[in-house]
Amino acid sequence: MQLRTLGSSDLQVSPICFGCWQLSPAWWGVVPVEPWAKAVKTALDHGVNFIDIADAYGDGLAETELGKLFQREGVRDRFVLATKFYWNFTAPGGRHPDTTRDYILRACEASLRRLQTDRIDLYQIHGWDPLTRPDEVAAAFAQLQREGKVRWFGVSNLNPEQMELYRGHFNLASLQPPYSLLAREIEARELPYCLRHNIGVLNYSSLHRGLLGGRYTAETKFTDHRAKAPMFQGAGLQAVLAAVEEAKVIAAELGLTMAELAVRWVLAHPAVTSAIVGVKTPDHITGVVKAADAPLSQETWHRLAARFAQAKSEALAATK
Image 1: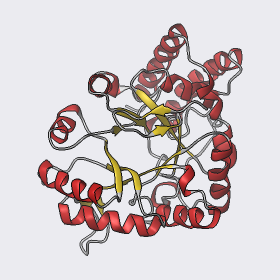
Image 2: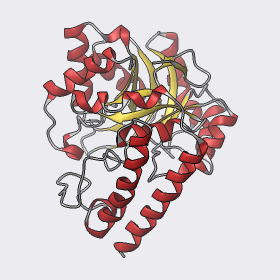
Image 3: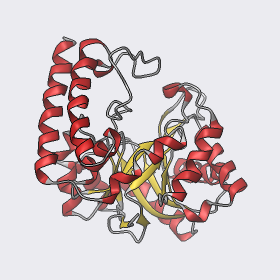
């Protein structure tokens, strides 16, 4: 798998990124750790060297399990490691956003302990905190870089105006936004901004929480956080699945699975450096790595974009 440079950093990352959000019971229920651990090693075997996690996933659970794996398998140095901070989940009154200097330093130390590593390659702000000045965030980042604990910094879920504020105080290597055939809002502003300023993009929900993976049917019943989402139930689900079935024909013509086609579609955008794919089992990673092997034609990209835009409109209309 050919590596790509992430924005203005010197990080060389695979176009497929191993996502660890699944180790977050509040969102996904209890996920068995052993198949997930095997999937991490499978990812390495297939050229995936980029892994993304966050301290908030399972309130430290995901980082703890990944740290155990790093220690047990000795594979830490084979990965470009990205994690995130923002949610102060240790506060007595419950979790809340926190990007103050003192909290950033504490959060980083806690992540390093859980991950059993001495450095984080990409440290990302998980969301926008309107109460902390950007120069205070920058002060914490400068200290972490001086101490060798963090190499590069990024943000997640921010708009161009928010990124611009941060860019005035520190080098912004990346943005992590949602992006898929069913979530294209960032094409209007965020992606052009990132292209203009050489900010790498590692998008999440490339398969739109699994809906574009080609595994579900109209009879599928979701029991996790997706259960009440419009496109995951009833007529809304049927509208999306009709588009998925049509897209499977295109995928077959290209020698791809539906999941591979959906990820290849994301990677075709010139602003996207790496597509995060949520993984629970080894077949989840082997089922998408082929997406990075070749480009997608403009004709096919636009054809798919139009069909899923129609499907999304039908799905949302069906729930009104």
